[in-house]
Image (cartoon, rainbow, N blue to C red; front, top):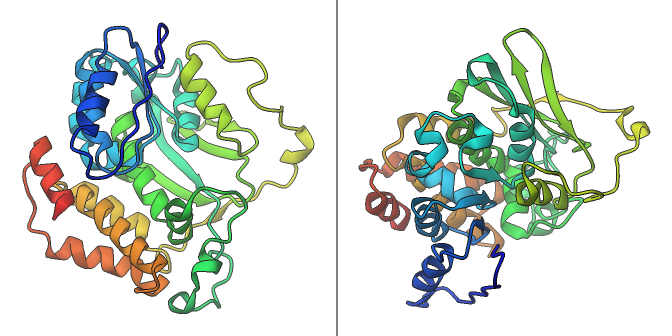
Length: 316
C-alpha cells in the first residue's frame, strides 16, 4: 500500500527479476505499509526486507511465520522492544489471527492463559464413517466458500490449523501448549483468548475476509461498514466440538515440528504443499497426505536457523 503511488509487480515462478522487483517495492521510501500476500516460501525474503526497512507489514501469507517465525519476529521493531502485539509492526490478515490480535488489544501478554483457534472442520470431521483413503478431490474441495484448492484441502486435513498454530505461537509470543484448536462449524467465532482470571474474549462476525483485511489496513482505526453487521439471531446456535487428533493428526504434527525446530516447520510446510499437489493430481490418496508429511519430517536431519538454511530446508 503506497500513499503516493501505486506499484504493481507482476511475475511468475522462475522469473529471476521477480524477487528483486518485489524487494525494491517493499523498501521504497514512499511505501509505509506492505501487504504480504505472495503465496509460498518466496514471501519470506520480501517480508524480512520490508521489516528491516522499518515498514509496517500486514501479513496474509502463512508460510512467512511458519517457516521463519523467529527471524521475522526478531526483525520486527516493536517485538524487539518487547511491545505488545498491537505494536509489533506486523498486522495479521488471517481471520483467526486477526481475531486474536483484536482480543489482545490493550491486554498484557502475561495475563494470557491460552489461545483457542476455531476451525470449521472441513467436510469430514463429523463423518467418522468416511474412509479418508477413498476421498475424492471433488469431495475434499466441497467447502462452503471458495479458498482455492490448496487451502481447501488443508482445511479438510486440518493442516491449516496446524500452520495457524505455529503462526500464533510466533505472532503472540504464546507457548505451543497454550494454543488449542476446537471445531466450530458455524465459523462465526473467529478465535478466542482465555485469560488467567478465567475470562474469555472472542471476536465474532460473518465469515468475510473483507473484515480482517480492513482491520489490518486501517489500524488503529476501523473502517465504517467494512462488512454487513452480524445479526444477533445468527448467534443462537453456536456449536463447539473437540478435535479428534487421532483421526486428524496434522495439528499435533505441526506442534511437534515447531517444538523441535531447526528447519522442521519449513519442511512441514513444503512437504504438505507437495503432498496436497500430489493428491490434487490423483497421485496420492487423501488419507496419505499427512503421513507423507510425517515421513518427510522423519527423514529430515535438521539444520540451522539462518534465512539461507531455512530456504534450503524448504527446497529439500
